Image (tube, rainbow, N blue to C red):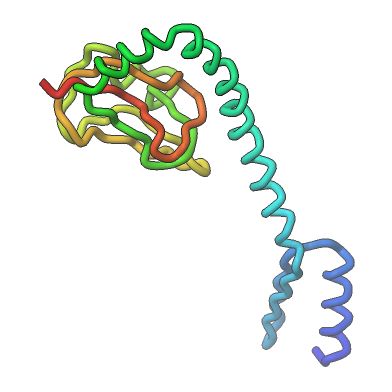
Length: 161
């Protein structure tokens, strides 16, 4: 293969819209990559929009309730201070079950030990098991199943006693 044929091949690949072409002949191996990888970035961006949108909608719905009952919020905050809060170590989607046909990892009232799996958080198609760092009893589950969570968002309240 001479230089003219290689240049023509490069032009053809660029016009075709392919992102990568590999050509192997007897004594020549050619790989041509074009700059059309930007399409992957736009796909990732589109996936992030639905994750952030439900969180923004949930905040206004939750805002009127504390304004209507500030005394109840103060009392609940003082009650919750004796509990340990388990927070999300990553951004993703919170799941209480390992799969749809399996039972939940923990319920309110469940006794847990260090290293017990409490939930799964899906991030970029990877399912990360979230393990407990404390022993105690689950007092409250703060996140609904299949809902998006942010980094450091409280997930569970645990009574260490």
